[in-house]
Length: 508
Image: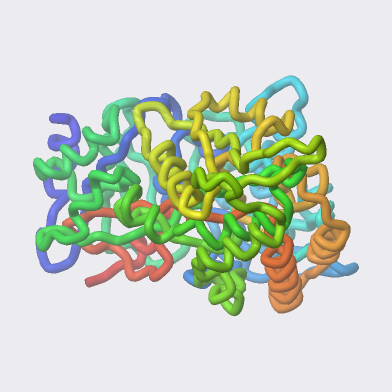
């Protein structure tokens, strides 16, 4: 990486104030800078330093104004009006107006609705919320909503580029940094944007060095070729106990779940709840993921305003209660072979043996190991499982056809706190075949709430019903580590896709 050294020889601590940062990430797919179509998750954290949005999410995961300084809704959420700041420019000094925001959104919406392509873009869910978007004038954006609710604000976090550059490579941005140089597979050099509408960043430069593999990123840090790395590798956990590094745990949007086929004869509500009482998530997180996961009882991140912490005590592991529920469902070990059984509808002895499928990521057997630990825990109460790793395509086929009992699945949760795709009857992620008229009604009501207070109240009801029905088990959100020699942010909520958030305002 000699080019990086020559370009930025002083990315170090020239004084007590951090003025530059050398960042190492894995990147092999990003050949051009396309902020609407990111191909690698860590590149999103870079893009968020260059491109801004109407709304940002604060440390409490609540919407705050960025390009938009205020907004209001009317007609019960049918119309949303955003008032854009008047002093905005792109990094070359040209004005940023409502027309640029509209053009950026329309590019996203057009791609999301294009039936001739399979990849509809990272921000495609905007299409579920926006019916139309227009500029009333240079500083007013008007949106007609499809989904008339509070979470429309979360969809306003898409990047904004000049209207003339929506389909261009490396378009201009309005953020705290601008792209000085980019060489695919080698490096990306960011410099402070002197035309930024806020105070100039004290950290003037960010050099991003690309690596082909995750181990290469860690090695680069070990040999002090970079100051900071982002990693979800288990090997990165070793730095949590080091004295020469600062480690910040960050949360990802990857939710791991144990899906249970509600249509299976064996998986009655009592058996599903028994399984919930047996699975020890904390043990799996510790033994398999070296702490790089956060246990959760619901499809929301713990500790946020969306999460119903009042129900946490109801999820305490209790194998004895699991055995009681299994006995209540008619299961007993009549032949003393360690596996529960009962007489089936044909009068034959039927063992409680469940198929258990898992998709394994290439070069990473951690999820199969997690599935095996779950199977071992279920065996403690007499439930027999056979864990079978599959390709993603084969697992998807099994889920779609309903030919499974248990499956360890992973979802990339959307920025909007709305897991209806997993819980509403017939929706795309409801592979469990969970059917609840009441749950459908709760989500339909949720999607009419336009204030945070009303929306949260309905989320609490949804989580209460999720607990009562136990359609599947939320296990944990994967987490990662920012490992750095220099602290660069005071943000409390460090999260994936925004891992550099706060560097633009950091001062020691």
